Image (cartoon, rainbow, N blue to C red; front, top):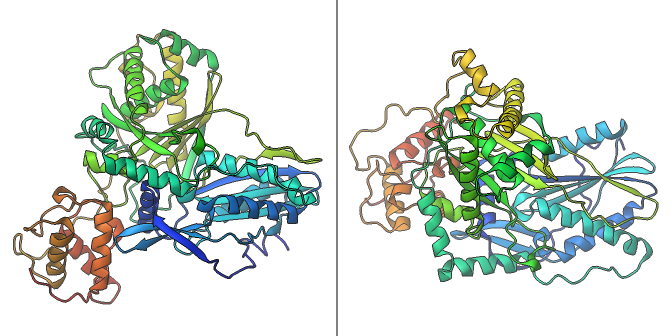
Length: 572
């Protein structure tokens, strides 16, 4: 079997395992489900890991080890489904897990290319499975294990758990011995129940109040694009490497007013400077991922625990880099102490602007991880080595993925290829390094005086980059009639909004989220309208909208597709 013959291996077993029980999904899983529905047909939320195994390997023993890992972690045999007005995680019974073997001539480079191809195949959250593993055979004693997992059941730390358990279970499965792993104290569903209870009891109210106050009035980050924003995005990325020497970061940590600064805080301050100079905005939010595992019993679990902290940075008044660094430290310390609040609830409390196809609150991410050994169990006669997989998809406009090793910082900056050229990614990476080097030598330098090649290139070009396109086409020829419904679709939505939002008066020009709507209420509207014969686009419903706008777009789309909406008039 060759690479070209099997680009997307099929599993041999097609029977659906028995479903054991169903529980409400976690807050993070609900967000993943919503994002997946809005971007249906993409693989934006696929977590990936690859491990090269050089030496004599028994694929059957590795397959049995994989089956054991999936049996240990309920979440790896779960699916997500719409259950009434909520999202449920449905846990299935343990069963055999296939590990297809694919012959890959051409060595490691060909294996990485095939991994990228397999990564682009989307998951079906309702049908599952949400874990796909493939063994790529480069030679008789040279393999690459590729693990693809949907983000709704996995995060970066979970990938490490998965690989460590696989390697620990391989030799027991090879020799028929009992495995050495301790029984898991909890399952991911236990964590999801605990977090819902925390929210329902009011235990997180102080934290929620903090985020609502801190994020009030936040504006969307608008980076000047090189290309017009396309109607349909490909979600691919252009990347450039970043490398900052340890003495540069160490000097900034030592000279920051008040001390207590980490390498990730230094990176965040520099990234904020670059974004501010590039966009011209002095008030911006950067998403900062955190592990989201507050208890030690959660550390050995696979699941979607990671949380995003939206760190708001104020660069107004042209402060020095040292002053900005002190502010970033304080904002991070405040945020870390209030990191139990799920990002989804921060969004609801902050009431930010929402646009179709755009993530609320944070349009850019800074991910700084510490370089720590993966902790793989040894396999007799086999050399184990992680394989780096380049980014194949990007859901943000800009992301900085960095690794902290000592005080040195390395990694890469990725930009949306839909909006930016590769040269711009290189300029952003150079800007990040230049800001840090200059500020290290003179931390009292004002932000406006720090070198920033991406901003300077824009100024030199006279702002000749493509103008930022509106995110939605302007509506034309909307039905007249003020705030009262005029069409069957408008009548239906007025009735549904009254019921779901629990308000007595609804006008067709009222904005959904301003009336108290949220993402799950938008799903309820979509579901109820579908039952009445009106198909609404979920991605548009997740952005700010009025009844007249969404019905006009729905009817225009239906006309373009050659059919009409069928909703019957509802009582106003």
